[in-house]
Length: 80
Image (tube, rainbow, N blue to C red; front, side, top):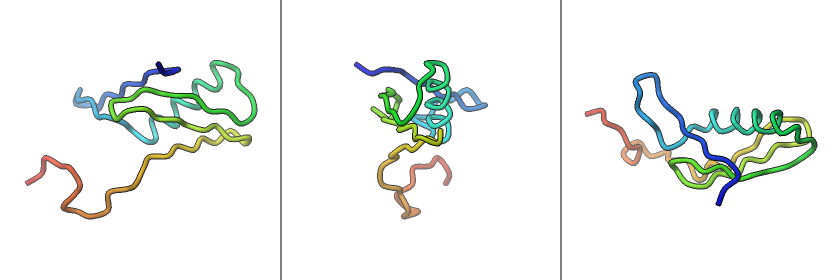
C-alpha cells in the first residue's frame, strides 16, 4: 500500500530500521527517476514504518523523522 519500499544495509551486513540521510537520498533519486517537478511527496515503506518525504521546489528533501531521542538512557544500543 505504499509507493516505494526502501531497505538499508550497513557495511557489516546488518539492517537498520531506517536511515534519515538514506531516505532523503532515495527520495531525490525517485524524484529524478520519475522526472517529477515542483513540490511533491510520496510514501516509502521502511523497517521503521511509513515515511513520507517531501521534495521541495528547490529540489531539497524534507522528512519528518519524528521526535528525537535526546536522553542518553533512552537511546537503544548494544554498548555496555
